[in-house]
Image (cartoon, rainbow, N blue to C red; front, side):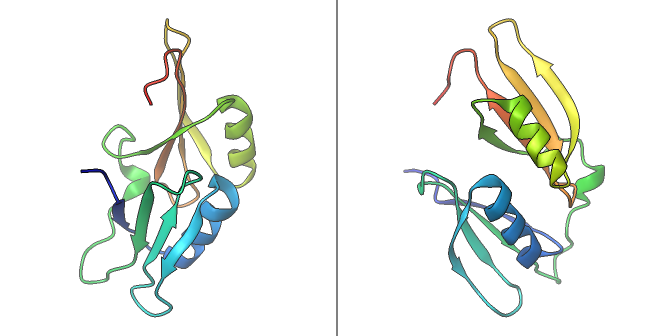
Amino acid sequence: MRIEHFAFNVAEPIAIAEWYCTHLGFTVKHKFNKAPHTHFLADSTGKVMIEIYNNPPDEVPDYPSMNPLTLHLAFVSEDPEVDAERLCNAGCKVVDDVRLNDGSVLLMLKDPWGFAIQLCKRGNPMV
């Protein structure tokens, strides 16, 4: 078995899908043009997707107040500092900067809606 997608309920799925495609390299694989405005977004490999939607009967989590270690979406980055600067210019905020002895750089950011995204450059790649 393998992961097809990870889904999360968000307040503004249309705007978030556009931002994630523009700034994180996702592509829209499928979307619904009516509520709950579900978008299936594939990463740059085309092998992993996230699903975002706004499902009013279920509460949208308060992502801005959540500790990023509770929930975050992690990306492989060849140059986390450059990517973080680019993303911060697009509305992100850096919330943590971890440097490990093996050379790993782990930058935690919050996207413009407060959802945590991590930029990972591992000293010893995991995948």
